[in-house]
Image 1 (cartoon, rainbow, N blue to C red):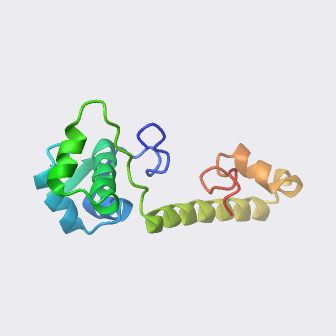
Image 2 (cartoon, rainbow, N blue to C red):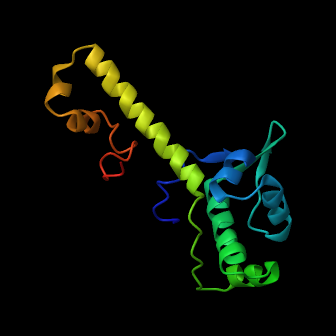
Length: 148
């Protein structure tokens, strides 16, 4: 996941605790607890709110994989993460988070097409999918990958 983190809110570098809870699929109190248990998770504070970096989110997904999926204890998960040369697979982001992101992309594509049709843009009529691609909208909506 670390190499291809396109699923993680585009170019966004920082996330509030509510966003991270939605991405990881655990309540915010679990994230706060894990902060105390795992040294690598160190959000900063901005205007009184926890702000997580992208690498914090990726580490939290690995912790979730170890604790919730592979059933490690917290101590076992800490040891596994500390082992040199051992790659820990990150859990997939929460399905609800991915569905909401996809829906936002689809809405953006529909609005772009609606605006182009209202303006009677001749490029739209021939190939609406090509129009979306040319304007950088198709991929964000999952249209290019056949995600319909």
